Image 1 (cartoon, rainbow, N blue to C red):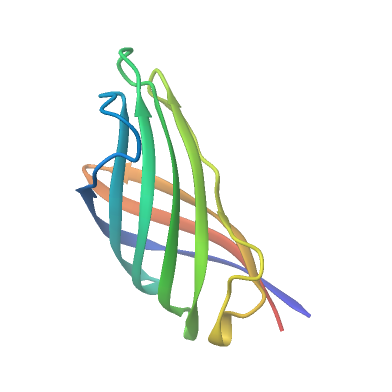
Image 2: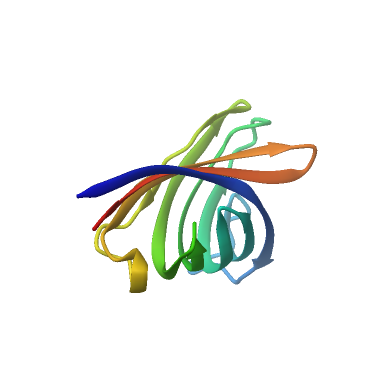
Length: 133
């Protein structure tokens, strides 16, 4: 039986520049990601992001993988999120999905999608997920 839920809260994020894999193209970037989640999801994540900026203001894209470890509405474990998102002249398109079969502990069988919203420089998440029991 699957439990379908929505979790929400806020998170703090720290991005650290990393050397690029190839060349010195100023449009391409590589960053470490460290997050601390609060709300229905309490925990931390670590990951890596590759990004591309364009000369057009508000247009960019990124891909990332991050492992989230903590407690989701009281269930302890971890799972991996895969990001593939763009900004088209300021209009965001997000795809943040749980990697299939990445759940551990009490989060084994987790599946879902996350969205991120930034208001007044604060990051908020909404996580629609299901957990197979």
